[in-house]
Amino acid sequence: MDRIVIADDHPLFRAALRQALSRTLPDPAIQECATLAEAKGVLDKGPADLLLLDLKMPDCDGFAGLIAIRGMFPTLPVCVVSASEDAVTVRRALAFGAAGFIPKSAALEQMTEALTAVLAGDPWSPHGVDPDQAQADAAMENRIASLTPSQLKILVGLQQGRLNKQIAFDLGVTEATIKAHLTGVFRKLGVQNRTQAVIAAQALGVDP
Image (tube, rainbow, N blue to C red; front, side, top):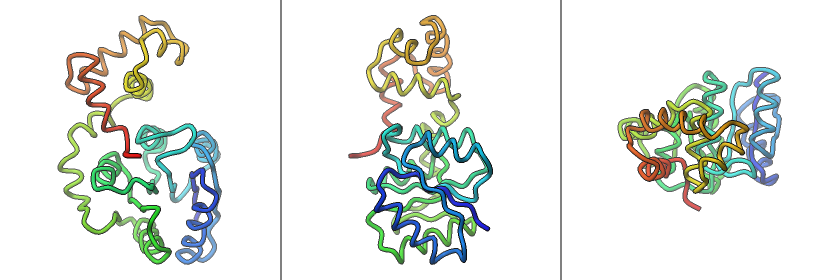
């Protein structure tokens, strides 16, 4: 039996995905989550065949959640579902390791088509977006994806305009630890300072 985890804070869209899954698989075991933390908890309890991940939830806004999940569960196929469906967002999702991208505006038939492809191990994205081109254009996305979980949290803090001492408080570490981590962040991103790192971190966001 296929085990599918849906992480989306909109009950109506979870229901739409559940309906599409029922048309794709004979008897899927579906678990629904409204937050990224919930999804992590479910995935910690046992392997899943697919995670359907919304990019915007109460504890996740942008690609940081996708990167974190990919880091924790590297063999788990993750299909992004999002209301932000411009070409740049789709390209970045694929570059950050998503197995597919389903726009929330998709009709049931298109959702079914996407799920069928992803479950078969084939990448899927809306027409007009080439997954191969997404990978070719992904230099900065790949650099960000190479960050450790702690480094990623620090980069998100920089993006939010937080000071070193504020980030240190958030993570429960010393300010000296944050400064040490920043050296690694700058090196991996190929930047020299906080301003350049913040510009690089724009790849973590999505359009409203």
